[in-house]
Length: 456
Image (cartoon, rainbow, N blue to C red):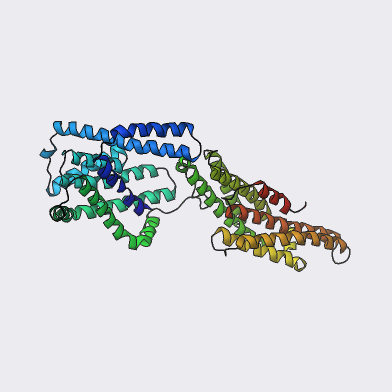
């Protein structure tokens, strides 16, 4: 994504070179901004967001028109021709200016647009403009580095990947600058290409594409290098939660969904240990980890801004709240009493134990992305079988009291049967909401929830 974003941002240069500098769009841009602003304020749904996009698009050309006027005035007062336009010193100086512009504007696209305008008005020549664009590509890493301060480990890793890619690409472009400029001159002579804004936009896209071509074959090794440079030392289950994501509710909800998936996987793993009779010294620590993770997810989910007009996000939030509820209920099943724990391994309850074990194993594989396509259907079948077994076993145990079961043992068997059924039910509902989070929680789904809930 970082490689694609770096290449995609060069499209701004083409937009400015093709439209912004050749057509006087100033007279059209302000009405576009006004129309977009009115749509943003008065329209509903998608039209509202379309209005915001139109207003932003119009502001780009308002800014370009202002830049053109400013650069024309600036070229009359500042003698850029006096700056060195060739040699290593001249290139480094222009690069430094480009980096400074990007850091001040917090946008490489704005710096490139400024450079294109300066070239179009004759304030700089093509060689100076090329070095300015290289500096802008390097300077944009400062924005990512600043955004990653205080961020999560994934955010810092992404920022570092951006910094290393742009630095390396900038150095490649600097080394190849004479050859690239020679290519522009050849194209100017052979193809009658004007060495203006279009040539500079092509230069920008070319050297970024060269960087992508260098990095793309080694992207896996590059990712492993980033992971070694920025190790993950924080809480494993909530590593996706990052307060900087709150500015984008959709991304923040995806982060909580991932955290819930990791937490659910840990709960299912602990539940499988209970079913297997394993009771290690680390069980208490694991339960504390799960409890803290659920608390953090709840707190983070509560701080995500609500977007009432976006139905999909509202559905996602609702599904995650259901997931948290069932996870908390399932967590309480991780500490059965000693008598119930012993009864879970009783051969007479083997059918219920087998269904529960299969369900939990399938649930863990599902939330970790290793389950077959129909895993949700299989889990629902196991949960339904457990509910049926509970109803049948309850009657069977009560009838055999005094025969096959003693009164005290019969009560323990009923508790164990109830444990199997509730563990299976909550596991199924967790997988249902995590696996079908984007579905609409309609009245039919709510009725299914009530219909499938076993009788107390």
